[in-house]
Length: 351
Image (cartoon, rainbow, N blue to C red; front, side, top):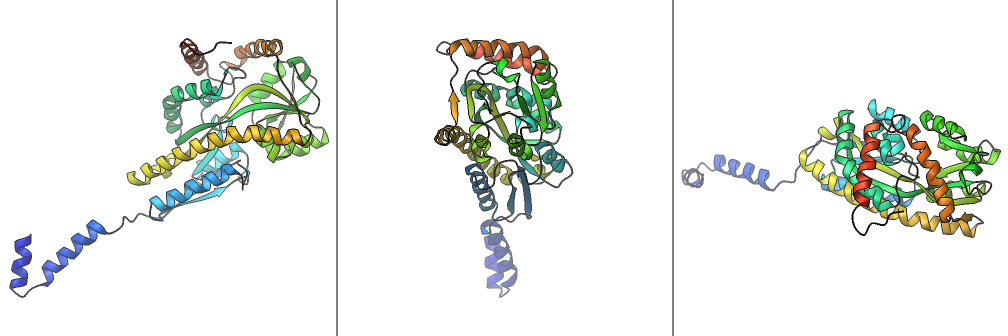
C-alpha cells in the first residue's frame, strides 16, 4: 500500500491515496459508536436510598463505557407496581430491567424460591451465599429459558419478625395477623396450615394496615422497617434469622441480545461491582437500622437456645409442605444436599 501511495503522489494524483489513508485512520482511531439504547429499570428499592444511589452509579458506568449509547432510567420505590407487576411490564416491553427479590423472581421460575422461601434452612449468610453460588448456573439457565438474563445475585441480610406485641415462640404468632405479599397465595396457605392468620396485601398498604390493625406482624429486613416507618406501629423485633432476603438484577433477553458483546462485557463488570456493593451496604445498614429504631423505642428480643430449638422444630415441620409446593422438590433436595456437603467441611460449625 505504501508503494501505491508514493506512486500516486509522484504522479501528481494525490487524492486516491490520501482518501484511503484518511479512511484507515478514521477506522483505527475513531471512538466506537453504538446505537442509542435506553434501559428502563423497575424496583421496590426506595428512591434516594443508598441502594438506589448504587444503581445510579452503575448506570453512569454503563453510559461512560458505551460512549453515551446506553442510558439507564430508574423507577424506584415501587412506582412501577409490585414485583409481579414489574415482571409483567418486562414481558410486554415497558421495562427492560429490574432488581427483584427471590419472591419476585420466583414469579418467573419457582426454582428461585429455594434461595429464600425456606425458613431457618440457612444458619448463616455465608451458607446462603454458598448455596446461591452453587445453584446460580442452573437458576440462570432456567431464567434465560423464560427470557431473562441475570447480571448479579446478592442478599440484603436477614428478614426479622416485627410485631406490635412481643412474640418469642411460634405459638405467640398464632394470635397475630401476619402480612404476606399479595400474590403469594402459596405462602399464605402454608401459614394457614401452621395455624397462623396471614393477610394478603401489597407492600404499599403495609404501613396503613399496621396503623389500622389489619395486620399485627410484618416479616421484613430492618432497613425496610425503618425507611417505611413500620417500627412506629411494630415496637418489637424478634432477633431470629428467619430467612435471607435474596435478590438479583435481571434484564430481558431481547434487550440483552440487542447489545454489542463489548457493551455486555462492560455492563456485566459494573453490575458485579454494584451487586457486591449492595450486599455489603445492605448487611451493614440492617444493623444500623436496628440501632436507630432502638433509639426510637424498638424492643429487640433475643432468642435463647431453647427458643431457637423450638423454632427449628417448627420450621422443619413446614418443610414437607414447602417441598413441591413453594419450592420445587428437585431444587429443595439440591439445597439440602449442598448444605450437607458444606457443613461436613472441618471448621464449619454445626448447630
